[in-house]
Length: 73
Image (cartoon, rainbow, N blue to C red; front, top):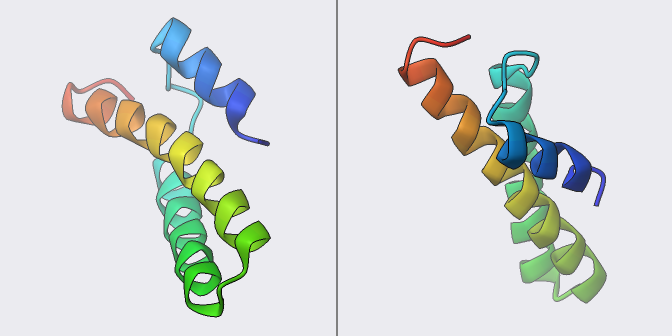
């Protein structure tokens, strides 16, 4: 839930200039690994928490990648 406000702001403003691409790539990878761990260990809290986080981080990451491709920083 930590990334929900940032995801909402990114969707509304389409502004990712202040966001770090490497940070969001690392965050997405880390959360994906935790999501897989939760699935493999059959831990519902770990799985749900990381599934939600992956969704929010993924939204932000997609917007950031699109901005980088368009030449915006």
